[in-house]
Every structure is written in C-alpha cells, then in structure tokens.
Image 1 (cartoon, helix red, strand yellow):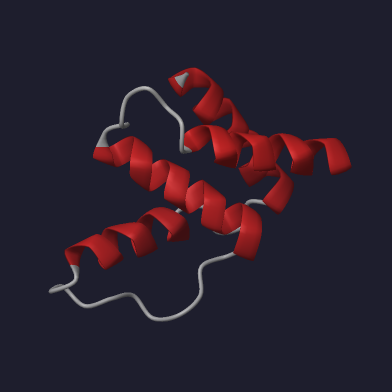
Image 2 (tube, rainbow, N blue to C red):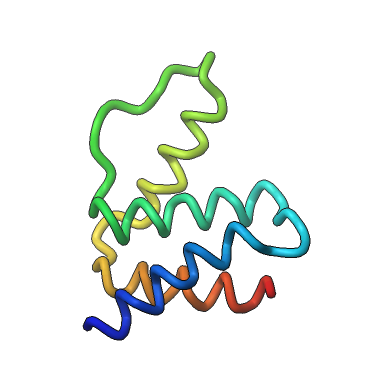
Length: 84
C-alpha cells in the first residue's frame, strides 16, 4: 500500500513535467482518477449547464463511482506512464 501511494505521488509529480500537454479528454480522465483516488466517490451537486468545464469534470468523476482509491491510483499511474 505504501508503495502504491509513493508511486501515485511520483506519477502526480511526473504529470506536471510531461513533454506535451495531453488532450482534453485525457486531462479529464486524469482529473477524475485523481479525485477518485484522493477523495473517493463524487460529492456535491452537478454544476449547471452554464458551467461546462465544471460539469464535464463532475461527470468524468461520477463515472468512477464505486471504484476503490487503490484502483484509481493504479489507473492514474498507468495513464501517466503511457503519456511519457
């Protein structure tokens, strides 16, 4: 578990040093996985239709409802590795 957390923290640091900025769908996936790994299932109300970015982030996170933190951390690590 400590190894997974350390690897996750390294992946978060690596995400800030990627040579190319990922496309918006990949960024949404990274956001959702990070939130699921650090906070668990989505909380709060879905933003209104005028907040398209907030709504997209909320929806991406909501798709991961029920996924464990460890699963989300592992998926985040693998996605960052694939972007290097």
